[in-house]
Image (cartoon, rainbow, N blue to C red):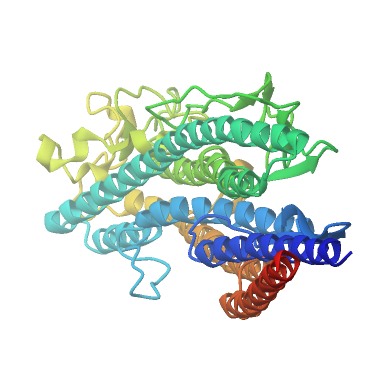
Length: 500
């Protein structure tokens, strides 16, 4: 009976030592994982009492799905705002220097608004001294600076769209790669749970992939009873289901003009970006880039085109005999034989008519006299007497420049304003977009930081707690080891008594 009691005690003590060893191993993993740069959740050794003593029956990890979902949502929202913000910074080069070291004024001399103002001033100076050839040349030079600024601004807009399109291609490639990686990790979890293996590291790997994926596209997830997970875009489109990753497809467009419509991103034949998207995504880097390429940049391009159209129309020359059509005067486009209609990209095409440009062999005084559009047709000449003091045409031009005009509503700002006021409204619109995105980005970043901290508190490793538990376990191990030694001594004593 004594032998059986000692054997039972020894078995129970050995079971306890094994359990403590397993718990120490889990703590050791936690302490090591605390410095992991990827997702690492605290591992928990679950102990149960059996007929043979305490035993680690399973190893699980700390988790909080609701908080993790908040992290994914905030990550996607932040990424979208950051993508838009970078694009707006590029567009802002058209109205001034983008510098993180300055608060920045809304407009500098490079903005269309400032260039229009400079041209208006030069034109009024010439109108006050119509016989001054230097003032005439200065007005034409100001006009050339204006069209050069508008040409450059249009190029900048299309470059921003090209950059966004390239970014979309990279984002799609990243999403496809991450979904493939997720498929492997997900299978490890499912098969491991079925066999009773430790799947906590595979679960952490899945979460790491999900966080990386949410940077590219807003997502939500669901989990099945067997541990399998499904992933959906924030629009509801299926990205991963039934253990199979869906493939995103996208054909990049490498060169953009104002009339270029970028291609959509598709999942299973459904467009998730672009104006024709049936399931448009709303967050993530991909969504932000698509918004910049397809909405923000084209709206700004329309504003520039509206200004270019207004300039051409304001300076158009009419047939003084009343028989011919109005023709482009000071401002025109290459090869134009009529006033432009609705023309996307007009800001990239506008130029100063060669016949009035001294650098191209033209006569700057035609701005005063008329006949810019057709020097061979005197019907378009306003100063028929050739008087150097003639101010009628110049007064008409300055009046046209300040008159209220009608603009396309596609520009997203005023549809009835003077050209200078419209240009100023364009600057304000771009600055307001940047301010709004900056505020939203800061807000989303704060949400992400808060959610990440909450997730860390709920599932992360606290080194002090783990070390404290480690000391307790080491003491328990030492006590159990001493007890096992005492039982062994009792066995030896009992054996010696029986033999003796």
